[in-house]
Length: 166
Image (cartoon, rainbow, N blue to C red; front, top):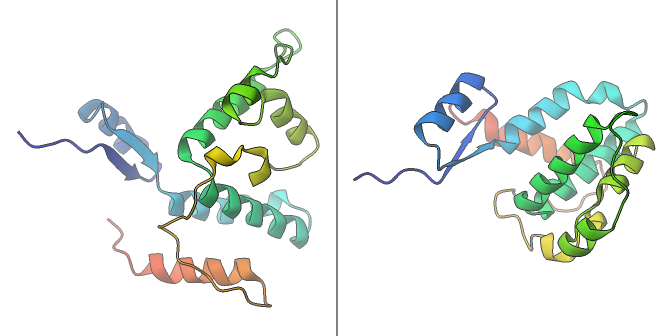
């Protein structure tokens, strides 16, 4: 018998994601970080009034996505969904501190507070046991005096522009 894939990485093409769920129900389907980053570069810039805020966001994004485990990010995403579903009729439950003390992840009220104050999660919001020691997928970029984010994005684009489209 042919072994089935444990992990499949794809873009956000809905038909493909649906087919993966049906054909390989035991497989984990992850979105490609490159596609997520392209989406961020294309659609998020206008959400930041100044270049400084945009650069700060990109720096925080790169720090979190390359330094925190996917499991931890998924758990925080579930908390974010709870925040977005809260209403006056269905408010968030009072904080007991259990989530942060047991998981070492930002609790729902901390996420809500950051959203209200237009702040981002930082690496320090995650307990160190969720930190990845080193990201093997991304090239190491030397520190330079010019904008390191621009340099990094240019290198990503050069790498991924050489990949086949399919």
